[in-house]
Image 1 (cartoon, helix red, strand yellow):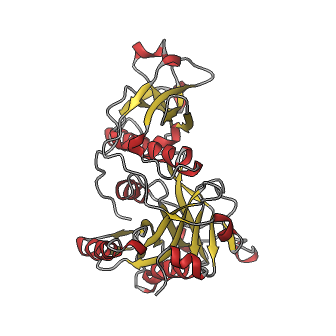
Image 2: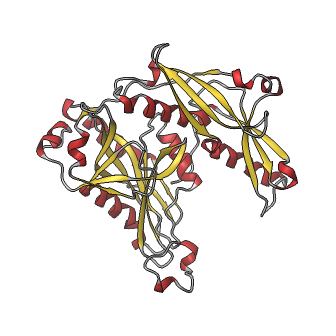
Length: 376
């Protein structure tokens, strides 16, 4: 997806920065990057999802929560921090916690490293690592440090359909099980998944190949039996009137006007008021490494060199468009170096997009379709 600007929607400024250090020279500090409000948005959203929505509290909005953040000290140093703990509660007696690693701030690290390369402080081939840092006057008392997190435009509780997750599981096939199987459950109907792939691979027919894609439509759901929160994807809208290039896909104002018109019409009616945009999918319709394969490639059952990954532009685009949507999905339909079709689904895990498992359902039964407003 094409890069667009990130809105500054997130917390008030916190006294936490990201310190970049060069691997050589004993970890010499190169710079400290200020963390903007948007840098904290994803971890706050994910905390809300995993500690409240998925625990029988789908009626809790982020605006109902009081959230605080604490630094996590490194084992080997008093002034180095490897992550953050988010704490939150509805009542003083019900505190819940989630720990996020420093890698949740990978986009901020990339932002800082680009500036260092431009300045000449980093050169091609240099390796760096990053850690969280506090002002010097805070270091001595860092174990007691805690700051409130304010989330402007914090959302209300999502509008959910009430469905039994066990009933869906009975007829579902799990895919990509090696990747993050503990993420929020996601179900695709076979029809919607096939459409996402078809729209995403359409650009492969162009000369040269370009990226093409789709918007994923589904419903947030809450299970009345288990309290689990989950997502069903049941439709795709092809991205049209877009700027399609070999390595990017840009949605234009005409693209969004069409998409929003469809969703506005859906949400007029009680039967389809849970319908919403839950993610996007697009095709990496280029051969990785220009199609250069290893000597043993043709003798191997599968080629491990593929382009199923989220680019930095993908991650920035998702953060901007799906702010306060921690169940966001990014589907990548790509290729191996020898041209085999491969695919992966990505979701928000540890504050950043990571590959995750999902479920495929061949057909929804009539009762489920009725609950979701899918009966004609």
